[in-house]
Length: 303
Image (tube, rainbow, N blue to C red; front, side):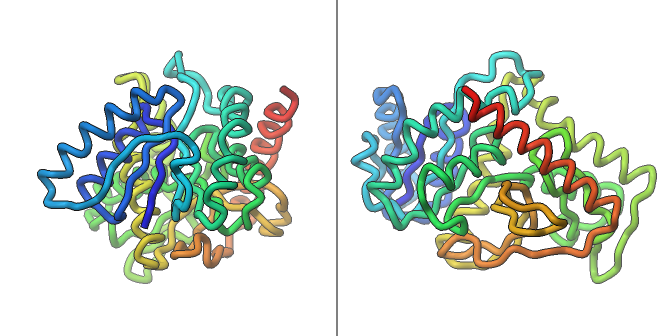
C-alpha cells in the first residue's frame, strides 16, 4: 500500500505524522513544491517512525516518484493569510494548483483513490474529477466530516451520550451554507429533534474552524485525524459511513456538483452514497448549498 501526500504545509505534515503514529501503508511518499521541505519532513518522520517499531518506508520526491500510489491525499494550498478569510476566496489560486498537479498525479497513479483536503473543498473536488479523469467514486473531498465530528462532540456534552453513539450529520457545503440534518439525527434508534440548544450548538459548529484559525492562524490536527478516518476505511475496506464531498447525481433535484452526503467508503473509494429522507426545509438548504458551490466553481473557472 502506497500513500502519497501532496503538500507538506501545516495540514499535510500533520497527516503525515498521523500516518507515522498509525502506520497503515508500506510506503509514504511526500511531494511538495519546495522539495527541501518535503525531504526535511521525510527525514524527521523516519526518525519518529523508528520509535513506532514500524518498517514503513518514508521518502520525499517529485510527481513521478508518486507512481503507483494507491491513495493520493491532496493538501496543497496557497496561504490563507487573514484567518478570517472565507474558504471560497481561495478557489481561483488553489484551482491553479490543481491544474498544475492533478493531471500528472493521475497519469502516474491511474488506479489511485484521490482525497481532496484543500479548500474550498467542494469546488476543488469537482475540479479534481474533471482534471484527473477518474471515476467520481475515486475522488473524495473531506467535506463536512470534521464539522460533523465537532457537532457530535458538542451534542455529546449536552446529551450525556458518547459521541460515537450519536448519528448526527452536517451536510451540504463545507462552508457557510452547511446545515445540520436534524430530522435524521438519532442515538440508539431514537431521534432527537432540534431545539434551541441544538441550534445553538450547530451555530457554534459552523464558526468553529474560523475560531481555531483566528486563535492559532490555521487548523491542522482535527482535519488530519478526519483524513486518517477516511484513509483507514479505504486501506482496510471497512465500509464506514461518513459525510464527505462527493459528486451529486439527482439528490434533491441537485446534479453535477460536489457536496457532502453520508457516503460509504471502502477500498475502491465511494461504494455507496446514502440518500437520507430530509425535511422540505433541509432539502431547500441542500439546494442553497449547491447554488453556493456552483457560484464558487464559476468564479474559479473564470480565472
